[in-house]
Image (cartoon, rainbow, N blue to C red):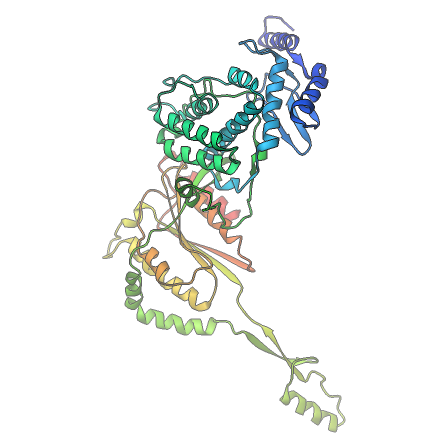
Length: 516
């Protein structure tokens, strides 16, 4: 291979790094002794291979199989040897193994909330490790990046990683020197908690969620993400901190006894992520759409009662039809050899046949079988801005017509006794798909439901695929034989962040959601 080619140059760099790095195989015994002597921790140490050709390198982690660390580490530029870098990583993970707890319900939080909670918990266990072994403070601080406060411009860049890295350094070093009021406040709150007691993972997670709520900005969604001095190389990936309850139905994390009011706000509106189908590439965008859930605000339930009175004749005709459709608890089944009672007509006929010398029919009993409907219905309402339009020849908006239709349909389903739920949706780009709960499956049609239905408002756009997937998630939790999803909309799926030259993109995604 020509030595001047890029491949050769890259190979030369890899070989040079390998010569300068300290190899795991050369110090494996020292690392085992370090864990055993200082942390009373014995576990398998498994090296993984680093590859400079990969954009994203593996991160240290541990699980029930053991502890996983790089196969080689070079000395840092500020004089920390490879051996001490190994020891720093092991000390961090050993502190997690000793003091961290696993938190349930990680899928109810956004990626930003999870990452920030990880960061605060990293700082907590490092604080406790330094308290036990003060010499670790020098190692942690020397290997933690120190972001420059004004290096990121929030008007043109996404500063979320820069902001959280500043917070991480401030938690580790009380003399951080930052001027941000939020950084100063949460650093002080963190150290006050740690000085009072060892605290807990749950308590620090609550503080982290409060920090996210206080500091998040719209510019965090910008594509130009500032990443300089944001990676803490010696920390693990914290996979041990979270337990995900993907099949947990409609339950959400909401520990009111231990959570602050700010964290409770987050629990009311957990964020869920759904993929989106790209028909051009025939593949999914993973975790592409953010669903924000909330309970729909209430209005005046008497408005819905007025709408039902307006359609009294229609409701009476529907009631007659529903009485015929309404299931009976039991249905008689005749001509049974074994049953719960005697069928007198068949029994007399069989007796006559017997007297006449004809073989009688032995099926002289009647049995009963359960004949109930077993179906769940989810009604999903499009609440996009176009519903405020008034169609030609109509005196009221599409939204008002939808209210009337949904009110009559809900009243009818309630008469049938089928479990059903009502929800509305609208979207403001893929980053904000709003999903409003109007009626849950376990709620009965009453004033509270009517009050929410009366307060419907039309706004934003129609990203239908994500809303259908989320509605399907709740519908799938119902223990019924049949499940029906009804979508009430006035138009095709669309959103402001989708290229107008390709209107089929969201239409095909909605089609794919139906297939799913």
